[in-house]
Image 1: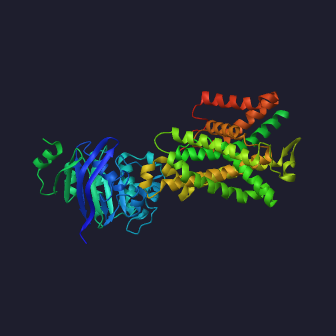
Image 2: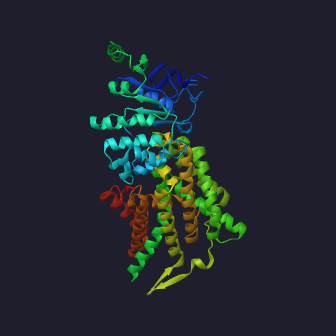
Image 3: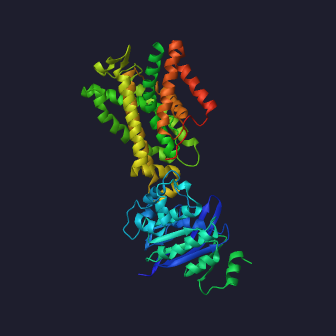
Length: 234
Length: 287
């Protein structure tokens, strides 16, 4: 058995006539943190939507723990231990903070995460557990979104632009929690516009450009020049 | 005293309208589906009850033990087998399909039961009343109102205090993200329709005990249901009860002025609310 945990082979994705991904090849190893960077519209969010099953995929394009998940629905994939922290947080507005967390854990997969451990990670959420999720600040909402994904005790967690729209000090707070989150043998894919944040937290990085993988490398050895070139395609 | 009587009778009638409306409100709230066939499903429930009471010789309210699960099962099957396929970004297909369903149900009932008016016989309950001062309040309207309050209280509890309610609210809020929580929306929608038709079954049986019915009366029940939902405010289940009561009182007061004005007065009350408070009197509360 290979060490590859997630294997993406020749992945295409379409929105109607518009093609968002072109033959993307990618792999994530067990326990590895991989960053995906790229400009707006490069296909980063589409990639995460494809992996999580929110976009239809062709057969054999996505393997998770040696099983082909390309044809599964999003709810079936969630059962296998894959969680997404979606762009823009997307909490359930008619659920309280605690209900948002509980519904994240409704599959009751075994693991370290439960209400207590999420509240220990983000103590402010314990104070606001009965508030409607809409009453929270952006940073607190992001904590709920992360907590909701953790409650599923996933084997792979995907973060989509978790710093988007947050104040720098809040971003620092969120990112300081990430090592705790992924330190437990969980694999992670981090999609991020903030390249230095993405590189500091990941071991490998992929750069997408207009739906194609333009660059792949180790986060600590990759050069700024290579990234600029892959980012902007100059 | 006649006016007080009209208001009391209207309030109790409002309980029945709230039951018409609750199922409609529930499925619109969860899946943004406007069910044109809702009124016909109410009438259909009454016919299911008629068949059960005549073949088993039991009281219609006892027959609810069978009618409710039968309608719930039909609801789940209908949703999974047909209505789920119509749901998407476009709101037109479910309207057209449920309109077609309405035609099919009416004609099937006509074929099976003929156009003769039918009635569910509840024996002494139909004429029993209790004295309140100088007024006589019918047991059946009182019971109907009590059942409506109980049904709405249970729906409220289910929505806000149980795991199922949490799942229904989550799917209603954001279908995609709810799927990421492992919720199969096709199944959740099926359950929502099953619940809606279970309530519809209660409404249909109480309707059939109260008045005579034939296959063509579904459309009118649909309108009353819609009006109660809109008056009360979409997404507020207690508001639906208030909407039903306002509609019922408007109708009985209209009938008091002139018997021909009963239905018209209800529609006028609805139009006034729609003009003054387009979102209804009690729009969606936050949890």
